[in-house]
Image 1: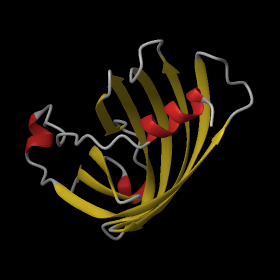
Image 2: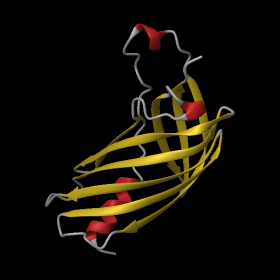
Image 3: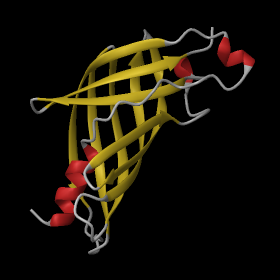
Length: 159
């Protein structure tokens, strides 16, 4: 496995917990925060235009549990000459059912490794919710234990 591809895999699997989204206005303060939990499967494929310093991968996920959905996305990563330091960003569109409501929303990832210390923040893109998920906001945590992927989605929905 190439060093860049190894970096992609490590960055994609970051599991540092993210704090729930903080309310930004009075309307959001009155919304009740919910949690959705479950597992997910992920397939990642490197893209042919990878360079030695910047690489790109596609993401294909299937969520199970409280969120029954699939997603597609793109990830871009950079590793540095310092061992254990790298960064990635990714965007993905999630489509399915959450809390009995059908629709879609976008997730934005921001991940860094600073000499082995990992940090990952995944947020729902504001105003990206459609249909029954219109107005959704929140954050997503990824947990990896014994090779299994799970998630906790902290979210609010209007109404």
